[in-house]
Length: 378
Image (cartoon, rainbow, N blue to C red):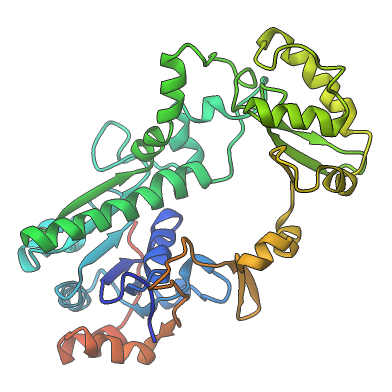
């Protein structure tokens, strides 16, 4: 039985990589029915391995075959949302662009997930997360003083891309339900990443941000907001920004009589950091966990993935789950009345019931489930 606040929402996902699949996973975990159209059987996601492909009804379609395209259009006629992640112009060349679909399904929200966006001088360029966040100013602010460091693909692909797309799609659905009119959601990772940096522009406007990495409050410049290596080579994270938390941190570390400079004296930060480095290097991470206990020092051990699964807080909240033997994050956030859940993934003929429920005509169903699939658009 499907659960979640998005029960009844119908989504068609044209299979892509990165933020597109993650956005579709979020919608599925929240209860939406997501049908993913894979471009060839050899590239179809195995949800047991591809965590971001979980919870889908998957079919295979050759998007260069006119009958497959017509069958896909018949499917999208019944959808609330369509998600595609191709370069600008690809879906139009296939006959699956938003103009065609909105003419057939006026309430449709057509989500377009790209790195550079649908227009602009870079729109047709190849790229990945690191390139997209590079032109936003975000990458320049992340890392040690000597070089920017890519923050995995969390800031661009998933933060500025997938999550912004999900918000845009759901906002579009709300508007369509009140107006009867759908629209296109152009979600560019460059736009979304810029949006996420709003607080940095606030700090700049207040004169509280220097254009140098590891020199500011939140980028590792502050001695009380950084990570420190312990005696065993593991790390701890400190985020004691507020004065009362900082005072307690000094008490717990035994530095109250040593670090007497004002907390926000930036000129003293390098000296203060050196003292913290020596202090945390004097004990193991486990020892510091015991020292800090439950005190409000804004302290936490830096855990790897295996350790995170065993953390008592994560265990208590069931933050991780296991599906088909694969350890992975549980759906988030938590809903009190309509809890999210990972839906069963259905492939091939197992998806027929869903297509029937969507009122897709029998001919289109047969072609979607039995039609030939081959070339991948790019």
